[in-house]
Structures are given as C-alpha cells and as structure tokens.
Length: 512
Image (tube, rainbow, N blue to C red; front, side, top):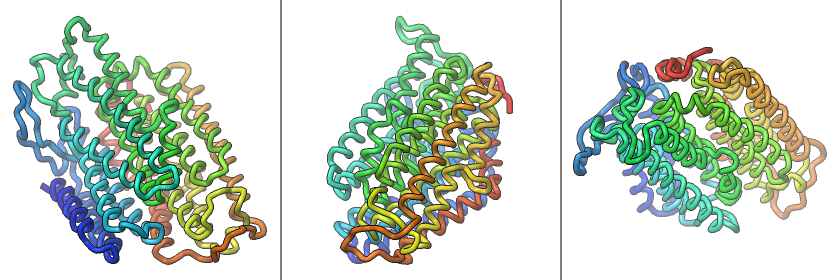
C-alpha cells in the first residue's frame, strides 16, 4: 500500500495547506512535501521490480490490484505498481515539487494557501499518472492534472493568464478526448478476449494478436486509426510540432513554480504515455510508421530550436527549447533499440531536472530585475554572480556537455537511433539532423548568455539588483548537483530503465 500511502499523504497535505493561514502556508507546504520525497527515495532504495509493467514476465514493485467497479461485462480495477520506467519519474516528481514550492516563497504573495494547496494536489495527480495500471484509474489522474494547472496559470499568471490557461485547457482536453476514443476502440475491438481496462491485460492481448476489429472496421485498420488517435492525443501533451502552440503561452504567463512543474514533469506525461500505449501496445504499427514519427521528432528538434533562436524573452527561449528537447525523446522511442528507448526514458528525467533548473534561474533573475527581455539586461554576472553561475551550469546541461545528465541521455538516444532497423537506411540521416539541433541550442543559449549575463552592467530599473535570497538559490544548487550526479553516474536510473525497456525491443527488431 506504499503507492496509495504516498498519494494519500500528498492529498492530505494539499487539503491541510489549503485550509492553513497564508502566513504559514509556504513553509507548511514545503515541510509536508518532504514526506513524499523521503517516501519516494525509500521506495527507490528498496526497489526490486524486474521487467516491464505491461508485458508478461518479471514482477512489479509495490503492486496492488483489486476489483474497484463493475460496469456491465467490464471491470475497473484499482491497479497500481512501479517498474524501471515509472520509478525514476515518481522520484523526479516528488523532488521537483519540493524545490518548486521553495522557489515559490518570493514570487507568490497572494492567496498563498490556495496556491500551495493546488501545487500539492498537482503532485498527487502526477504520482497517480505514473503509477496507475488500469486505464480508467490512469485517466482520472491524467485529467486531475488539468484542474490545478488551469487554476494556477489562470489566477497567479501574467497579464494574459486567462487566455493562456484556456488555450492550454482546450488543447489538452480535446487531445485527451481523441486519445480516449482511440484506446477504448481498441478495448472494444478485442471482443470477449478482454473484459477489463487493466493496462497489462490489454497490452498483452494486443501484442498477442487478439484484436478482432470493431464493426465494419477490420483489425489492421483499427490498429492504425487507434494508434494515430492516441499519438495525436499524447503529442499535444509532449508537445510535438505542430501541436505545440499552447506551450509557449502557458510558460510565459505561468508563475515560475508552475513553469518548473510544467516543463519538468507535465511534458513527461506525454512521452511516458506514448511509451506505455503506442510503443508498447502496438509495436508493429509504431515500427511501420517509424519514419513518419521520426520526421515529427526531427522537425520538433530543429523547428523548436529555430523558434528559440528568434526569441527575445528568456522564458520563451527556454520554453521553445523544451519543444526541441522533447523531439529527441520521440526519436529515441521510435528507434526501438535498447539505447534508443532507454536513452529516451533517461532523457525524460534529465530534461525534467535541467528545464526545472533553467526556469527557476530565469525566475530568480526576474524576481530581482522585473524583466526577462534579453535586450533590457547586460552584465548580470557582476550583480548576482551565484545565480548567473547556476544559470550557466543549466545552459551547459541543455547543450549536452559531458558529465551532465543531458549528455548521457542524448548520447544514448543518438547511439540507439543511428542504426535503428525501424528507420531503415534513413536512420543516420534522421540522427544527424537531430544532432544538428545541438548546434542551434548552443547558439541561442550562448547568444542569450553573452547578451544578458556578461559585459558591463546595464539595466534601467527602479529595483535594487543584487544577490538573490538563500531560499531562491538553494533549490538551484540542489538541481545543479542532481544534473551533475546523473551525468557522472547515469546508472543511478539507467540500469533499472534498461531492465524495463528490454522486453519491448525484440518486438520491433532490436539493435543497440
């Protein structure tokens, strides 16, 4: 019952903070958020799962499975459990939430109890997404994430917060509906062979070739239609170009702590779901359309990087760079190799830490200067050297420098994609084009740093510019240390990730 306890404690903490007075809400939320952190790290230290949660063989960690609701011939189960794919994301969620709460103390000065309560509610929903193994249970948590995110952006966001919140809600909600229809059609297409929405049962039936079709739609047509319905739904959440336009608006208008959670964890919901649903349940369909999916991935890498290069707002630069980075994850998944899929999963964690670090650093600079425009700032290193140092460390992580988490993830992806059988003779071309994105990333980050951080200090502001408060800088230091730790020793997570993705690889040919 450890997963249930983790979710229940987080939900109880959210209600307690919601009812607490504003003056203690921030510190109370931070203190209570340490419980899930300790819990997830203890679960990681005792983790003994083998194999993949949705394939036969192996065993899950902390698994609980019992009948919840009976609806006609179908049953809905309370089924939760962790494998080597979900365990790292649970740890990422708890740590990043705590750091985001600490980073909220300066920018959030109104309705604090409601803000911190919603942040903890968001954390509980995310923990449910990464641990649920029944589709309806998973879908409840998936939709629960939208509610606090909509309110957090719509109430505490910037001048265009309502527009950004509504746009995010509409995009992701329609995407959820499309995905829902695609998956349910698959379950009904299985006929009497599966009378449950349990994800392992559905996955094994689909991988075992038991799909019968739905009405006049044959099995092969249903596979393709359902695959792209689910792909479209998850691609919005990732986001993949051209479904990305909601993300920059959401990031720019969201307060810094919400941007940290959005880039650090929420985007990983999309790639995690793609891996669990599309690439696990319908591996042959994914392999058949691998060149098309790889095209989306490479376009996201290059187009996202080019858009970042054209921005003058530091937050928009980091937001578009997230679009680019998530393209690497898609390329690794569609490679269907050990290094490709393992690297993609590892990169979800690495990018979560690095993007959280970058948004946090931009937030600290904004709290001090009250501007994020590159053209307004110069020489910030002379006024706030420590903050600038961690910003540079985060930028190096984004560029994929050795001994940092981003390097390990991207290296695994490129090794796995370069000789991927699913991409055929075009594999080196896709990989080389994606690698070119690193050059563009380095270009726009170095240009932004040169303009804002170095040179003579120039900033017209009525506010005093100086070193940031300890509670603003402390989470940055923790994130830098974690990025370096994962870069120096990727096996902290990579070994368990490999064990969980290895059952998926032979389905589409295997390889590096």
